[in-house]
Amino acid sequence: MKRADFIRISLLGGIATTSNMGMNTFLNQLNDWPDLGFEMPVMFVGHGAPNVAAEQNEYTKAWATMAEGMPRPKAILCISAHWLTHGQTKICSAATPETLYDFGGMDPRLYAMKYPAPGDPALADYLQGELKTSSLQLDEHWGFDHGTWCVLYHMFPKADIPVLQMSVDYSKSEAFHYQFGQELAKLRKKGILILASGNIVHNLGQAIFNEHARYEWAEQYDAQAKQWLEQRNDQIFLNRIAQGSLAKLAIPTPDHYYPLLYTLGMKDTKDELLFFNEKVNYGSVSMRSMVYGKL
Image (cartoon, rainbow, N blue to C red; front, side, top):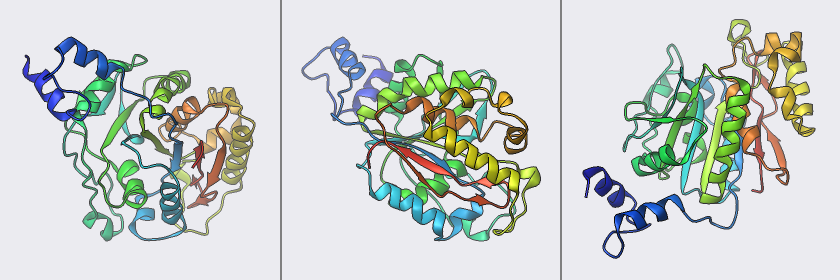
């Protein structure tokens, strides 16, 4: 038996062992990882500036409330706007991912916060073989950036659920990310919570770091996006250039926009849609978040 296969068996020992089956049978069972009989909800979270996570406020309390209302995940797969790769998609395969402080000049309290959730190398390996839209590359070095840990710190404060972070291939089109989301949808039945973290409106060049700052164009685009989401008009999101002048201001770069497309791809026609944190922060950062499915 190869050492890599031994490691996979050890880490997934609760699923199968080789004491009563051959290696090929084990791998077949792993590929047929059983459905749980229900679908986990899928979430898009507007994470905003890291400072939001430094204390209890209306945004972090809403994140916690959403987590309290859903089944406990077997694992969490987070797609964050802050891990951008080019020409490939990576997935964190570290057993103990680090908390990354991928920001500067923020609230000092943030640098004392940690999110010590375990990784799941075996699940990362399984997904590498299972997902076909993109050829996943395992990465043991990336940890949890603030798009992931700042949210999970408040959603699941015990940090006792395995978490994997997956990168966003910045070289791909809107259609690619949407189609990738469609493939990821099958993981909902496996007990995996898929959390996409970005912002529908994200223009830091226009940001005013004052909670009361307001831009009419930002609020108009956020409201228009809500209407499209309620109409299930996915196609309009797949061509942001065609959305007009408001979109050019709201989405000057698509890094925080792409995670939304995964959520749209993962939803099902029967899923209920629930919005929360329906505010624009710092004038030009939409905190709008949503859940598809039943809580």
